[in-house]
Image (cartoon, rainbow, N blue to C red; front, top):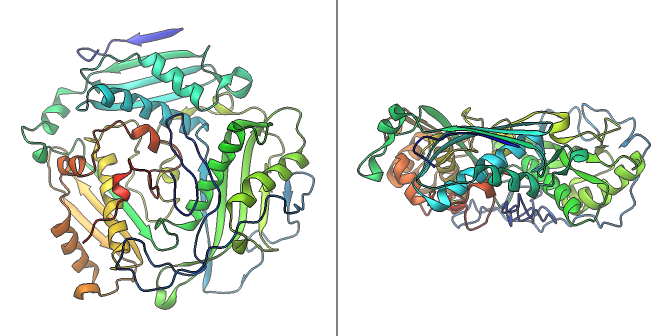
Length: 476
């Protein structure tokens, strides 16, 4: 069953994690290991800080013995606040990042929304899309504003996306064949359109007032925080072993969390990842599987192939399906909504967030294109050896092409390269080397291509697929 409202005139491999997070069929995640440093790394792209990159730690073999306790949580008796390590060391701290599979209800909505964006861009690269999605038991609703010359079968796009992430049976939480699809789309507001439209693409105004944030650090080869990289890699691996049949009891929904213990860098510089404090995995499962089997399989087929052994020790805490039962999942268990996994999409809690979500928007929405530009800047500064850690904030006003403000924060890690010794010096460098008008960002990063669905699961950043042009370091 489908209900449609008229639309008016509009009718990775991630280096260091070893997985291809391509989302052409939701994703083809392929996780092997995270090639992350024990200390600092020399940033890729040349001009690094001159710190040696240590040999990567090998992931523990899949056959490694797993100590599993009944109830799916183990390492009994370890202090949750510290979990071993240096509990009383003032120079360490814990930081947690979480991720979800592409079939988590919120992430499913992101996948659907970006599938619609791509369907429009594939036929009309000038399409304006602001698409939201909500899902619950037996129903998917898509609503928003779209202006395009393309003729799109939105219902088919939606059902294909639901199928691709694994929802083909009501017992799993949703069935692409039988779910009710409601489409309520209208044209973009003429008030917004006149503020964005321009005879020259370079002069196009921002589609909304917003703040965007970019982040980069030298913890991993892809210049991303290790806690986030590991959580993302575990989620991608969880989906992979479901799809390829390695673990036959896994169902689509799932979530991961990694808490890292960090040491404070020299002279207050970049944090140094020391060890994994704890890992939490919640995997939707079939009715008959035991908790012991769940914990054993998750350790053997998900954790050990992904997390380098050097970060695991006798004090690492593992919680495998700690709730004890996760049969009812997907939209049957929890309503999903576009844009509710913004921290998962970006930096895992590091570096701050501007507040706007990414999926379901074409590149004239500066929430999206500006976020990509901010990451491009931050990564280029770290890779260029100007700092080892960098946050970039850019603000825009609706209808105006030039940013209202640009801020660079190197968290005390500015290296004095080329005589640029302060964050203010780096702001001037950014203003010299990057044209941050929305139209120029779209042009430089080639954001009119139908590449958005690939970003919808397993992160918009830290990926090396060809489509992710904002991950290409700019020589500055």
